[in-house]
Length: 384
Image (cartoon, rainbow, N blue to C red; front, side, top):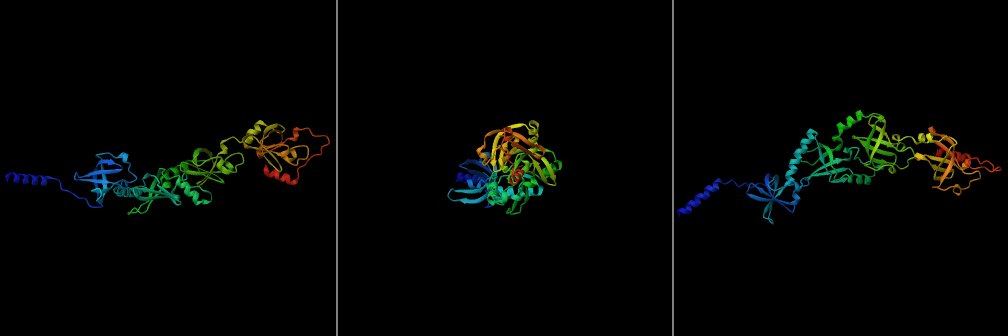
């Protein structure tokens, strides 16, 4: 009997000395220690009194399980009981939501630059999921590098462009966040505002810069550099005639450009002016009455064009093909055929060169002279 009383006394003393059992409430954020990670589920020790579980779907998308390890302390939210598992269920994701919302509010107030990764896109912009908190980067808040430069603002092409940006890290500023976390807006433009202003202040006409092609439209190439964006007009892409800018560059391609115009924030750029004018090069090699050899690039109703150096197209007028009457130029020369012609008109400053095949041929003594008609002369002037 005495032994039983002693055992009871010892039990009462041990019970009195043991820590109070604290059963957290649903929705409460508590601390726990990781016991182990198994099949993307995390077993957590809470107060050395409970073994609780964070199921895979409650881990969140900002946590990499590879960064977690046994005995590491984490904060989790209590969700409730799991009758099937016989464990209490926790959420790492929801605990992080509270922490992240608090941090986003601070970032909004401090204008701190942070990095986010879009998880989805729609035609209005990019969506960001931070452990269940939904943020948004509107199209209007993208920098020139990422802004969708699309012909006729085609919504399908805009969406295709934005889908390419899903998963790409973006440096942004928080420009709006409400207490409930229902409206979180990020701005990529705001993140580069100071650098952009400094770059624009230091930029001057004649500067040569390296940039990235951010858009290709029928009238030219958009190029971004240091947060700025300029246009290489179709006439400034190449010294030759450009009908399709996409043949000269691709989006995201690195290019060197020369600044040829500054009007407030409107920046005009040139690619062709980084290369020597092919008309100047041609003038150094040839002069009036010289012979020149090159392939025929195309044939029209009023003449044939020779593909000269640097993309220059030299015209052999219909009247200069042969001493005889020419009904069909293709009876005399073919596209791709290499021919030799005499330079009969050369005005590099006006970008004009006239060529002749018949001038290198001996004319029959009784052959009448063939003159170009007024209509053909007008077509020749347009070609030049």
